[in-house]
Image 1 (spheres, rainbow over the protein chains, first blue to last red):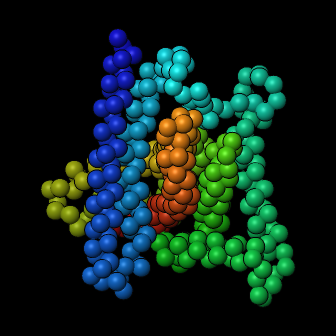
Image 2 (cartoon, chains in turn cyan, red):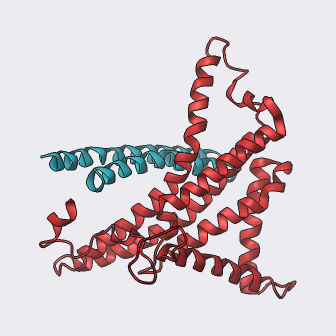
Image 3 (cartoon, helix red, strand yellow):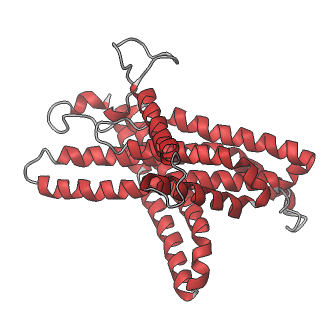
Length: 74
Length: 250
């Protein structure tokens, strides 16, 4: 019984990956919208873009790790 | 455990089996000095770096050879990044950042060779890198600025009422930095390689194998991108933390 509950928990934790996908899409989409309005300023902001992407993506990776832990470590 | 349940039918191999650290010789226990597949591929990464940079720059040609121009591109790219993010006085720490970038980049890319082991997917490796950056930057901040380094946590342009609350949040986020810094790299690489193995498992089923092979190619292309981006992200975050240590005033 406990193992099955852990698998359900792993599936629930995987929802976090979808949430991180929304975050990454927001960052990239807003960057693109800004870059199309002012293309000359876009090149200077790529570093900020990647930092933002990394922060948004890290949370999805945390969710992935939680589900892995539930699957194989608990 | 889950592995026994899946053993009849389904996956022949487990997608996470590739991350098991095994001794190169024999089946003995793994000590800190045991040569394992992990240390082997870290060694290959070092050899590849030496090959590109020492052999490439041997000629010191005015018109660079192919290998030399690869080395010059990487060097110039990181140098410009350190200069842009940390300012002129951050250039002193360029060798450390360059070392981190090269190690992560080369072990990421060597891990894309089939049947290889990816050192950066191991949380122990990235935790050493991440906590190394954390301690180096914190000590550097206190040495350079003295107690003024604590001004990093005290937002002087925030409303006076909010400052203590913001300070608490800033302190927490400061101490979470090394954790997220290292888990981001390890998690990305591990997730990517696990996905590749899952698609490889689908290729065994005749019905979906054409789709699965197309999928592997696509995911592999994505992984090539992710490997470069994660090395870049790790390096630029190191630069950002270094900038905080050198200029703590907000």
